[in-house]
Length: 396
Ligand code: PMP
Ligand code: GLU
Image (cartoon, rainbow, N blue to C red; front, side, top):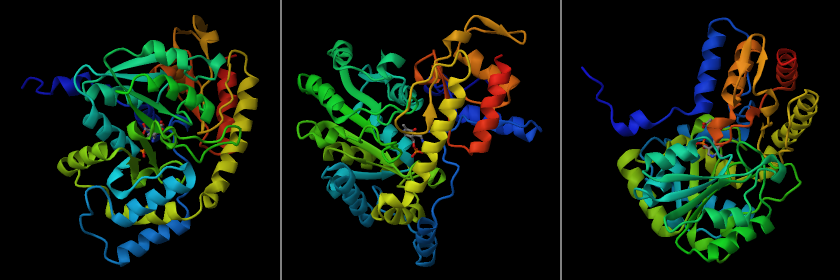
């Protein structure tokens, strides 16, 4: 039988982060000693007080379908969190709980985009943004930033990218993959441009909010009164609470967008997992200081990996202020032949590191910027040291 797949799925590229992680797993299973620095996944265990809440929920008989947009107790906990951490007031009808921040983003794209609508994505952007936009028949419009400007989009660049077809702007701050954080003033600069274009809806992905190394305070677009009505704030528990596999993310949004996401979810998933939702109530209502020990360790690892990478000729690093990735510019290696292999671009370089150094990273092409590779330092100090010394050896 011929291939009966849809054009939509044939045009979709696999997630580069998940694909690299799968490749590393495969190589490991075949006996290779691969160090995985490709996946943005904390290597910590979910804290016990959160696990206990899940165990209690099972014992208490939470096993039925939940409301499609989440338990009201969870929506209230999310509302409390938004007020406490971000100074944003979201009421129950403005909140939707989803199966990870990824599904939350997909819902919003499906809810807001018509065929041909343009979505501005400052590059580098998180790997799935452009494909989620394309799946929703939107058109990603990439705005190139540079390491010199700490990978941040300026108000002038935003203004220049806007056309009559622009429907949305999506960004993450702290940024995956660059670790850059937009200050309140910088966000205000972007908001001032957006004031002239009231049709544009902003998606502010704040999933790395708590993984902040104290240089630039976290700021939220929706906290500006004049942006509140057209900003969707996306967040989740995967990163700060080491809960990637629990699959809970959420949005605070204008209620018409939240209603649309709820309707979509009602036809697609019926809502997120009940036990995970109960555990997240505890995660969010407890003080974020309870997970600070992980942030402290990420900060030590950041220092370590930057010192080690800056010692390798050809690696040019920015200093990430949040998240747990470095995004070094590796253009110095392009056009060179190492151990008989010619490196033409970031994908070749990432593949070279996998094959020659047994270290998994992700090509910058996946994030809309082909000058860099992304290295996750959500790994033990021992693995970081071993991995970077192998890389140094392989690129000598
Ligand atoms: N946004 C960003 C910026 C991310 O790095 C990730 C990675 N997990 C997500 C969203 C998706 O998060 P989740 O695991 O909650 O789906
Ligand atoms: N967000 C993580 C990353 O960028 C997890 C993988 C994924 O969801 O794509 O590596």
